[in-house]
Every structure is written in structure tokens, then in C-alpha cells.
Image (cartoon, rainbow, N blue to C red; front, side, top):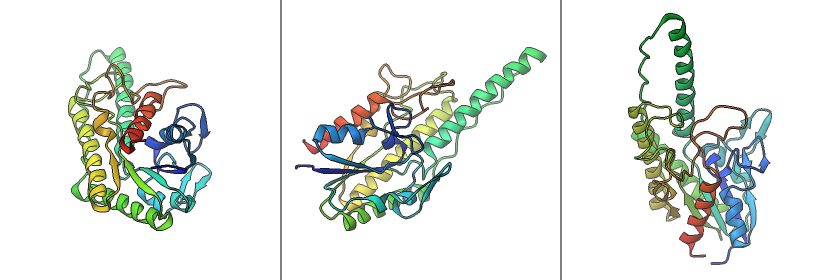
Length: 266
């Protein structure tokens, strides 16, 4: 297979927010995300349409607004001569990383607020962190159906294109434990990890229904989660210039590009 024109669709796990240099700061799109690295490896032209925060709907037919910018549906920009299209989306349909980020900030604020209370009033027992709600079967089916609709639409617009579904890097793995980088109770870590597994199921379902190729980086990265010796995703941190929490880091993006190249045998 010779790839001349690569097009990339997807959300932040493809766009690469916080990885310098940025191509589009508002979209959180890096010049060193896996689509750019993949295009370099293949010697192909690249049309990178990824936007952080994208859902399957904003890829298909719904404009996406970020601050004062309006991004048209990503499929509207898909070149008809693309011969390889990568797709990483669906996590925002399930509230996956946004839920994790919200919970982490909530934990951080509770910890610091309670520290102030304890300093003034003496030790008080902190309230337990609640485990996040799990996506329902219907939620997972909607995400899978959205991926299927995107694959079908890509094939109509770019009929020569090989479509490759690339699922999400594992963020919280089996060995991830409560820490500053993962400021969650054990039950919450388990729930977020289970949501990641359900997202991987949505990708597998979409691949089965469409025949699109699937690169399961969720499985490849299981030993590279937050808290591991060589993480491919950022943990939680606070401060100016801190990496984007719970998103791929530069090593993770390189690993994804390598996985796609290896899968395609190129």
C-alpha cells in the first residue's frame, strides 16, 4: 500500500493539545501529533482536521464552537483524493476525559479547601470521593453508531480511502493507584478504567460493522498508563505550563504513529 494523501479526523487524542509546537492553538492541534508523525513516516501529504473536544456529531454534520472560533464539521474538509483516513473519536460522546478532568479538579479543590478548614478548626475527616457514573449500553451503542456513520460518510466522499480506526491510549491502567497524578479514590479509578474499556468496545463494534481496520492502541498502551515508569499519557498537574491532564504526551503520540505503521505493514 502506497499512501500519498493522509487525512486525519478526530478529537484531542488525535489532535494533541499541549504538545509543542502547536499548529492551531484553539483546536489544540499539534504539529507533533500522531497524524503529523504518521505522514512524515509515510512521506505523505497531510490534511489534519482534528479538533480537541470533537464528538462524532461535530465530525459528521454539526459545527463545533470553541471560544470565538467556529469549526465546520470535519467531514466537510475531507479531501476526495485521500487514500488513508485515520479516525480517533467517541471519547467525548461518553464524557470520558472531561469527566476524569472534572473529577481531578474537584479532588484538588476539596483537598486544598479541607486543608484550610483543618488548619483553622482542627482535623476533620474528608468526605469520600464518589465513583463516576458509568456509560450505559445505550451510550456505548450511540458512540459506536457515530463511528460507523463517519466511516460510511468517509467512503462516500473519498471512495479510494482506506479507513483506519485508532482507539484511545489507556490513561488509567490496572497498575494506576491513587496519587497526585491520579487524584481519585480506588473505586473512581476502576470506574474510569471501565469507561475506557467500553470506549474500546465501541471501536471494536464499529470495525466489525464496517470492515474498517482497527489499531487497538488501548491494548498496546496498557503498561504505559499514568503512574507507570514510561507513561504515554499525562497525569494531573497544576501550574502554568503544565501538560494537558489525561491526554497523550509526545511519547504516546510517537507510539500511536508506530502502531499504525506497524499495523499497515508500511
